[in-house]
Length: 168
Image (tube, rainbow, N blue to C red; front, side, top):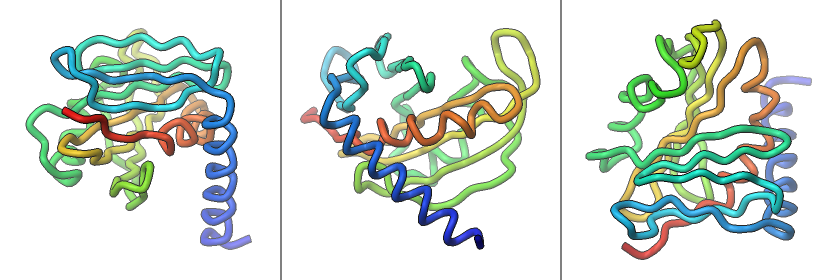
């Protein structure tokens, strides 16, 4: 199977996960200065932790982090800051690949790379998805040792597919 076919198959799988997440989930909100900025549908059993301009989503299949990127007006501007944005979770991020994508129908960029987990310094891989929703740009991240980020990609992209901007 060539890489284009694999990519298309992955997109179909992600879309089906997104529909199932939307059907039986609950809502997670990322707020900026007390005002809702981004809403996502998460599995009903997800644990959501949020603070100003940040949300962490932990499910049985993935742990993902989403930040509002301060000062960024474009995906390209946030893309160049990916390593700095995810520094609280993953350090020494070295980009190994990048491709255009859509997140919830909005333009985005999927960036992969290697580095170290911030909590214990173990070597690993991270995937950063940068996307624009309404007036804001967000960066989402999954990471882990070995192929953990790749295994979490499908469930996390299904959650991100439900992302939509809220009035600000």
